[in-house]
Length: 369
Ligand code: NAD
Ligand code: AHE
Ligand code: ZN
Image (cartoon, rainbow, N blue to C red; front, side):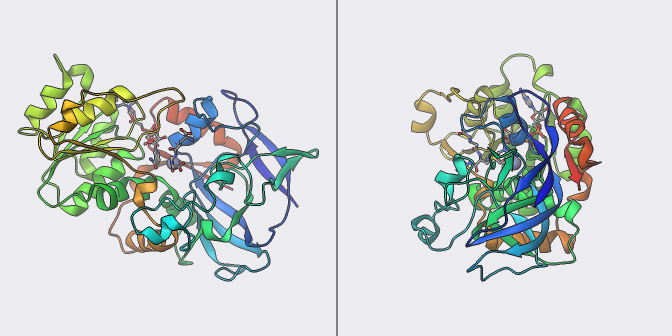
């Protein structure tokens, strides 16, 4: 079949809106019609050329929701008409990682996914006979896409695609980082670096678990109002702080943060986030994705004296199990997604969505097909 898709042809270039060829699902695979997709900063990161795994040409996008159109042989858990959210972190429930119960990082698809191909080593997308590569195993910037069955969460049919697509990355990553990774307890003091599509969901998660102090750090003063609505108690614009930011944050949190979260992808901020954590017990969680060649550093003494540095992918969520639950939370009014979706654009304007993000004007743009 053919499908409309936004193709990343070269690093730094706008996405190219094209009609491409898409092969049907093979064994264990599912054809999905994507109804809506968010634009996450990670898509921009890869499009910019900073991703060591970035491949061109490819079809980006990993924050989608849609409907099953066709299933390949031996697909047992999904059928035509099911509503689904694609998972860049699959859940096979059989591999060493899934069975360990210690991580959400299912290993089954990781190698082929990182090479932009399906588990059998080939791409389903092509143009004039030349392959176009998949991205994060999801490629939601295509109206139709093919995924392995284990990379799809089945969700309730009454959930709106143009809202719950955000659960495919940002919502789950932010809230999950608080609940699954850091395991924040009521009464905690926390510092969140970066108040965009991820950081605001971290704040939402912190409020859910009853954190006492939620400090938000961002160089964009326009983020303040939304962050306060979601539970931020103190706003810090580093550009307005005289002297070093770390002692300022330690003082503000009365000795250091019990938990800090880096939601930007900047190694300098990762260090500041670690060093503003409380001596003896502060945990600092890296969520942001840093570019090729970048490294983190700190004095080992920071860890010797009890701070813990950790990271999270997809908020530690096991997608097929946890995503349908988070959709329920949204449908029950327990989490706020609507206010974070500041822009909805037709597919044809997907490049405008990237511009809004680069200019810091949007929290999340959702593109509908
Ligand atoms: P975003 O563009 O919506 O938000 C980034 C925010 O950081 C913006 O508000 C911006 O003003 C702020 N910022 C930029 N530079 C800053 C600085 N020097 N100091 C303070 N604030 C600064 O991006 P997003 O979609 O929220 O993604 C954030 C990061 O999280 C990205 O690196 C993305 O790749 C990563 N991410 C990781 C995961 C994961 O599973 N680990 C999942 C999703 C996104
Ligand atoms: N390809 C990059 C790493 C990108 C990365 O860390 N991705 C996160 C999800 S970001 C979603 O917006 C992730 O899931 N990481 C775990 C994994 O296995 O990819 C690089 O540096 O090579
Ligand atoms: Zn993402």
